[in-house]
Length: 254
Image (cartoon, rainbow, N blue to C red):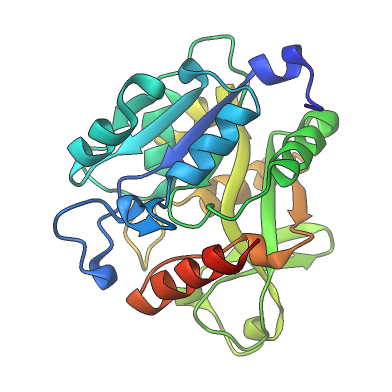
C-alpha cells in the first residue's frame, strides 16, 4: 500500500451503478450485475477498493434500475445512494457524494460497467497524482484508434482540456486518439457547491461529469489529465459482443 492512512481516509469513492443497459437487453438486473468470469462486472472494482483499504463508509454505489439486485449481492459491505431518476453521470455523482461526511475531501468516481480490468497500481497512481497536485479535478483518459466515432475525445488546446461527447464529434476531432474513461476525482466541497448550477448536455438532456470538469477550468483552476499506461485496462461493456469479449479477456488474462 503506497497511500498513507491520512491520504486514504480523506478519499471517498462513488461507483455509478444505476444504468439499465438497453443494448444488453438487461430486463431482470442492472447492467453492472451482468457477469464476467462468473461474477458481476462491478464486483471487481469493489474488490480492488477493499484490498486498497477503503472501508464501507468510503464506498457509495449509486443504484437505480433493479437496485435490489445490487443490495442482495453486496449487502452491508458498501453504502448505497438511490438515483431515483437517471439524469446523467454528474447527477448520479452528486447523489452519491451527499452520503459522505466532512472527513471526505476528494471523491473518486468510477463507472461500474467499464472498470473491471483496472489494476490496483493504476488506482493508486491516479489518487496519488491528484493529491500531490492539490487541484480540484483529475481525469483518467485512454488511447483509442483515430477515426473511431463510438467514443468522445479529450483534446488539449493550449493546456485547456476539452472533453467532446461523441454526439458532438466532428471528423477533425475524431483524428485525435485520446478519450474520456469516465473515471474522475473531484474536490467534494467544490462539486457539491457547483452542481446545482451546472447546465445539462443539450443533445443528451442530462448532467455529465465532463461539464463539471470543463467548469473547473472556466473558473480559472488547473486540472490534471492522466493517460492510462495500459489502454487495455479500460473496457466498456455496452453490447452482447463486448460482454463476450470481456469474458474471453478475463479467461485469458493470466
